[in-house]
Length: 392
Image 1 (spheres, rainbow, N blue to C red):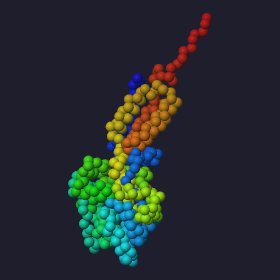
Image 2 (spheres, rainbow, N blue to C red; image 1 turned 90 degrees about the vertical axis):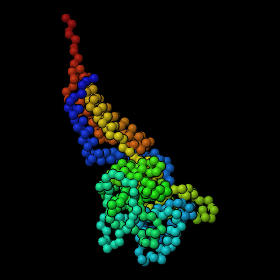
Image 3 (cartoon, rainbow, N blue to C red; image 1 turned 180 degrees about the horizontal axis):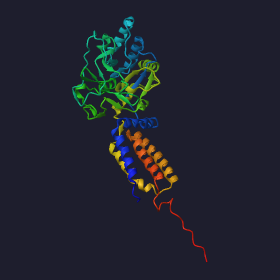
Image 4 (tube, rainbow, N blue to C red; image 1 turned 30 degrees about the vertical axis):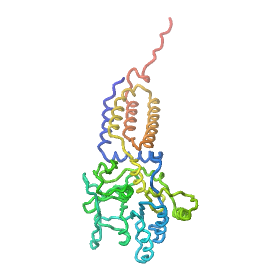
């Protein structure tokens, strides 16, 4: 085998070090992850969540929300989560009482609320129960010191609050916050609180290692970053059952009368029911809860894979110089296509994400150097064919 060029080895290894040590280059790998998610399907087949689309009003009117609870309660679920913040004002006090009458029948009711880092100094400080078994550095967690929006007091005493903040620095279409820091305490987000209620767990039973994982009593480890976010597959919501408000009310009426229903919702009893406004974008909190319920966490392959690919590309760089330019280009294109197909298969079956820029970049740099650098004497492109001497 032809000895690899020292320049190729240096460039490829420097590329590897740069990617492994520079966070901005590591985050750029999520461009490839988004492509993988867009062209694949999550491995989980069924998710125990039913999303009820409440329409475009946010929040829905109190009478409509009361009808929502009445329809859901016909199927006797344990946990109902309402994501819109139910603030209706004094003008709807009478109608709000109708909602309260229905809310009293719900075994576990989770309602959306929103935190703030700049609370009203005259407002009383709200006490929020946090996790007690927390290790790790908390400096990257989004920090808040008050509650900006929440349901009325009469509604709050019947429910548990779940906070729906999506800080711009730590959340996007792939990362959903599970943890916040509130006045020195680590508290759960709406998604984590919903999952804990569905699993009948309290914060005291959960162990948190910030930057590593949230460990549940059953041994499940939810991987989290240092900012408390979970890497999700937004397409998980495609595995969730969606029903409209009208479909729910019709099914509840038919179920009560004993008639055959077009949509069978009896299994709601064991599911989490999530009320969410009708939008064109995926419900990130629902995707996070679905990932926790099915243990379908998107995980990046170990950095050892990156190192192995870089070393392999550097080691084979010498052999590449023996091939012609056209063979090198065609081979690199074929390898790139095959690599992407393998990556799609892996993330679809195992929810494991393998990187692209570093392995493919190392490959193409090796190919580029093989084309530019002088060919060895006995390569296919430089061997001269001696003409036979003429006959006397």
